[in-house]
Amino acid sequence: MSEDIWKRNEVDSPCVNICIIHPRANICTGCFRSIDEISSWSNMSESERKGILKELPNRSSKLRVRRGGRAERLRD
Image (cartoon, rainbow, N blue to C red):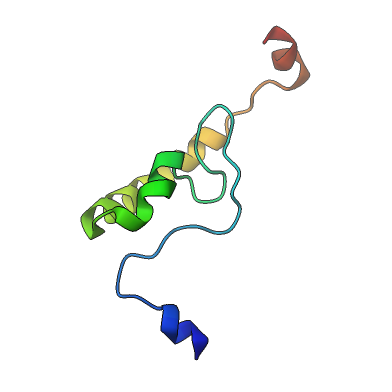
């Protein structure tokens, strides 16, 4: 019953409670949103939220690129 209290008729957040911002991609490794998108989510319109949700699957590939391991870290 308590879940019904917080249920709203709006586009749900894609948050999966894995909130770690990738240092190079600058997106959350859990939901793939930027910090700005995360912090602005509650103030966005339904169409803005839907637009972001549509982009998220394409962003996951940014996190799969290998950074080069030890050799790459030594170059930095």
